[in-house]
Image 1 (spheres, helix red, strand yellow):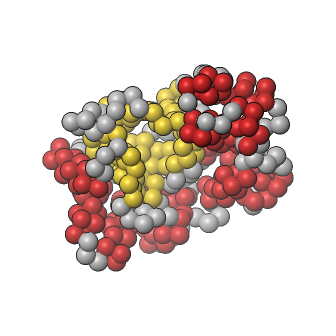
Image 2: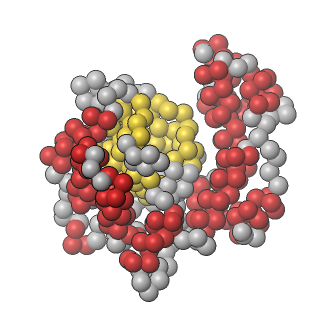
Length: 312
């Protein structure tokens, strides 16, 4: 698997020398620890900011769908694998996801004494579109093709804004009024960065990123059904040829590959958590052939589904 190529710069030229202070990382870690007392995921604001904690080195979450979001890891580290590329990040990096994509996450730095923490700030399309109009009053500049993931050096102002956001949640005073303003501040820093025009595409109703997102939502809700490419392109509001190109640009896989990944990961969850047998899991996620399911499962996970059944 290759290293992800779309490395982003979240700071303008005059900010390049600035890096977040270690004390800021420590403050953010301390605040997040209050809301994540044990391993797992915790929602700090309803349908909003989340924090994830993990104290076991090497623990892995097999493919999950990342929402459009900003992710900050103030302590610990993890590696993320996409369909054909991957990357690692710790407190020195931050990541922006522009679409919901399958990915595999493995914790590479964590312990009981110093757990891994990840703060996730969702990017809402409507909110970002509103900010686009303010940051780019003359229209969003043209950008390169939209990528699913942008990885770059942490921005000190975004780290400080994140601290203030968690402090506000901690104080529990006017959170519903003030928290969205701090989230806006974080998004504005991103929009004003060199990669801003690309991130702005997430919020534009008629952008390729938004159209692909509509198709992704349909696939998530209908992954057990056969795909008719004409219908899927219609959901996205594109021609079939244009849809194929832009879906691949955003997700780094074809619609059929995307559907297969959804099916296989759902099947693995059924096998591991509900102890479902191989044939039943295959049928449940839309496979007509158990043998085809087993072949594709083995290629995807490096283990046969029957061995996962035994292991569960």
